[in-house]
Amino acid sequence: MKVRPFLIAVIISTSLASTLVMAHAGAHDDDEKAVPKTCEQLADTKRYISDVAYPEVKKLKEQCAATSKKPAATSSSTPR
Image 1 (tube, rainbow, N blue to C red):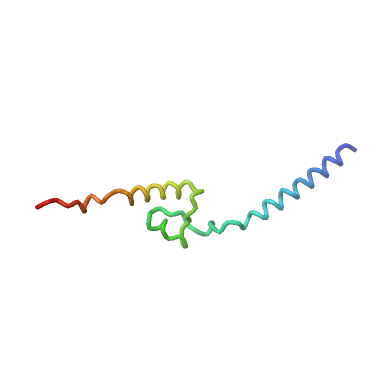
Image 2: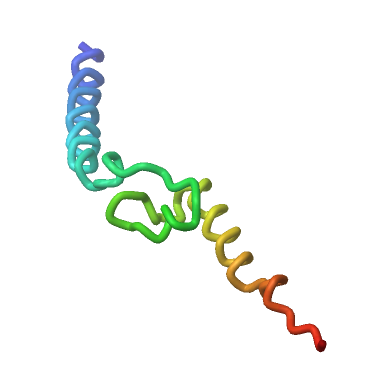
């Protein structure tokens, strides 16, 4: 007779957990987008993921920001 309350509690907890999981399944549309590999791809937010929650995207954003801040070495003016 002590098993019945335990089974009821398990059934209730699993039904609550399943509704939370199902509610979250369609929350992100990033599944159909690819992970960018270049700075040009990172700028195209329609085709590629731009969320910094992904470690690859965060690292790429930092690299792109660092390269855009560097002065161009080829545009140095040398006196003639």
